[in-house]
Each structure stands twice: as structure tokens, then as C-alpha cells.
Length: 112
Length: 115
Image (cartoon, rainbow over all chains, first blue to last red; front, top):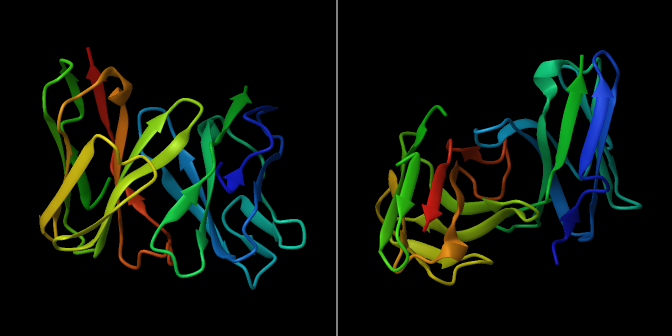
């Protein structure tokens, strides 16, 4: 099975609310994590990344939290907007690998 | 997506026919990847390349072959297409390969239907 997965396959929120998308990983050697956003009919796009020497990283309206103790990653989106509706994937690299391992994705729906 | 182009965007083909998908990049990145995306499976790696004429298999490589004769082009070939290969195919590029510094840049995808 995959070493990266998501707790919830779908998430529905109201416009303006904060969204939290979760991801679990199993490989303690993973040292780099990325969140991607995929809109319908498009390829995944980079949102934010974090390295294993960090616990938190903030971007514009997005925050990624990394809990290495429980091997958990989350993406927080503040003041969610209709344009945030998409599928969100987490991905990891396993120390020195040339490849990313992707989770199955969570579909976020923002209701007006 | 800037710097990476996939062709064709859509294709319908018959079972048993060969099909070639093309990925073209203008970023001069060393690493190129082919993924397929299916409902319930997310993105699964088919093959990847770490340089001209240097390729390796991913987790779902059976029935697929690749070639990279120059830095900018990475071709994915289905030697004899089957219905199970109906999918959306994504190409990705990376300068570092480990995903460092923004990870991969993805193309817009090719929707392949095998009938």
C-alpha cells in the first residue's frame, strides 16, 4: 500500500470558514513534504512545502503543519473561497529518492 | 503549464493499437516523470527519467515503455493499448528529482480512452 494517505476523501466547507486537510505518512525517513492543488481538468499545482526540520510553514492564506511524532501533515486554508474548491494531494520524498509518493487526495468543496 | 507541454490533450484509440504520448519541456530540467491518475488511486508513477537515455520503472510500468533521446522530450508508449489503460496521464518535470525546491511541475494532462 501507499505510505502516504489522507484521513478524509471529501471535505465540504462554507465560504469564509477555515479548512483543514489532513495527511498521514508512514515512513519516518521522509524529509520533505509538499501539498498540491488540482483543479478540474488541470494538472496538480504546488501550494506549499515543508522540510522535516520544521514544524510549521505559512504561505498566503495557507499553513502546513508537520507532526513528526505521529507522522501527520495538515494543510490549513484560511477564509476559504470558492476558488479553493479542488482536490488536494500531499506528497513526500523518502530521503534521497528521486521520486515523490502521492496520497490519494481530498476533494474540497466550498459552498457559497 | 509554463515550460511543460503534453500532447495530445485527448485521444481515443482502439484496443490493441500502439499509442505514444509526448511530454515536452523548455526548462532544461534533468528529471521527467509519467504518472497516471485514476479515481481512487491518485497519482501513480509509470516511468521516470533522470537524464537522456536514462530511465527507470515506477510502480505501474507493465504495458508501458518510455524513451528520452533528448533533454526536452519524454515519450510514453503503450505498445498495445488495453481498456485498463484508459486514464488521465500526467507528465512532470523536476530540476532536482528529490522534490526539493517546489517539487514537480506538472503538465495539463492527456485524457486517453481505449475502446
